[in-house]
Length: 132
Image 1: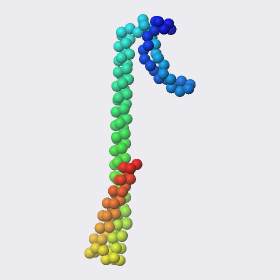
Image 2 (image 1 turned 60 degrees about the horizontal axis):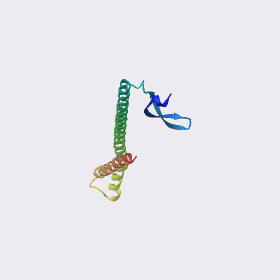
Image 3 (image 1 turned 120 degrees about the vertical axis):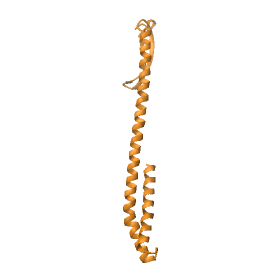
Image 4 (image 1 turned 120 degrees about the horizontal axis):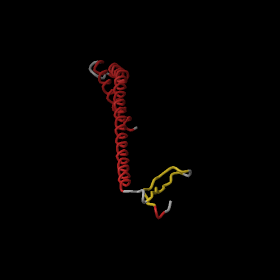
């Protein structure tokens, strides 16, 4: 192309052997009509809109994944809290009633142990899941 008959359209990055390079795209001045310029502007706006739509889709996808992860963490923490509350808290409360004399009855001591272990387990699992 003759440089006196060319017009620079835009800079475009592309993959080359050594890596990414930026090239200037040229067009003939006679070919680069006002209609072609309008088409270039429309194409550029379309690319910007597509980029914006893709970024919004990615953000929505990330929020959905995070929401599912939070729901799973809550379910796991509640289930783990109940299981550990029954096994560790209930058993520990009943044993502490018979050995240490804690609580007015072994049932109240077991319920107290269950509640304390369950709540602490739920809180601990939730804190750990948010730190990930």
